[in-house]
Length: 432
Image 1 (cartoon, rainbow, N blue to C red):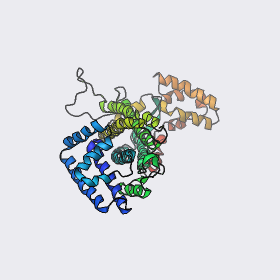
Image 2 (image 1 turned 180 degrees about the vertical axis):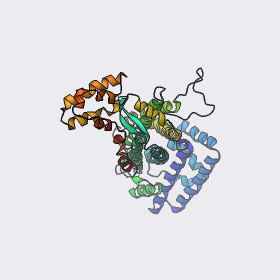
Image 3 (image 1 turned 45 degrees about the horizontal axis):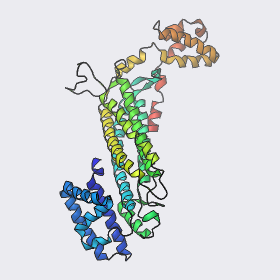
Image 4 (image 1 turned 60 degrees about the vertical axis):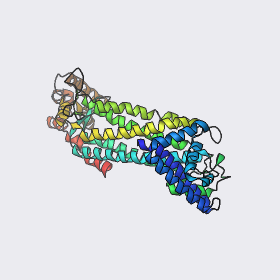
């Protein structure tokens, strides 16, 4: 991912755009075909030199830019040294944004391809662990308080579904950003035929930007970085779940703790969720790119460069960070340690309180009003909450409840299988 944003890659794409444009111009009779060939030949020598000695050649380009105060002119000047007199045909009718914006589109599509591959690894890990724990009973929580039983596999299936959506978002963001603009000053094609743009777009695997106004509209880029922000938030959502499950009072799952690993410099007993805490922070970094990208949408007239400095920061930072974060969360899921027995113990810890709704519904089915049913179940649930007895025993002793429910009917309401009977349906929806 970092290599995508390296100067060597940027300059290589710049050259290819210029050379492909020259090919199209040669076909239109604007540039001699021999000159177009000379540009390719000389440019290939320049790229070979850049590959052989990146630092030295980048320093040469930078030195030229110190004089020109213009990055594209600095590059074409350096390139011309390898091409010779035919370099006069380089950048014919183009403007800098044609090269810069089209290059940015190529880089973002390259980055998207890596991110999509990263998500695929995470999806594979989530699917494997979800199937492994499809029937591992655990407590579902709302407001962090015990609610009703679920399975750990269903929890992971939910995250799998989220990252399936995230993959679709990245694919859509890639398609939206993959546009080419070779339209000249203010985007009117006055000095560059639209056929040249079409040729370059085809060679680079990009679509044609319908109206570029000299720059590719930044709503495309805003959508791209917004998609990255959503992916980052989904990573944090999963990481936060794991962090909560690793809390000492919960201990239902934890990050893999390797031999020789240390959790604290002062307390040898510590096993801290450092990876998922790290991911929570990284998600903030990725999301920090979203608002600047949205603000970049507003430019003066046909173009200004207020967006440029922003993108030079947020594009490498956001894509490299998200690439790293996706790899890290995939590793966490792959090696996640799951404590099924602890999940069951926590599930049982409140003496059957998690079955309160079943009793409520059963009472209403038997003819008791919902208000009276709720009050009857709640008063017993509060006793169970304080550890005075199990909810089943308290309900058995409640005369009002026993008027409507026999002992065997009450007992049947405390069946865990009732809450897992549609797990197969959920899994079919998620995994097919």
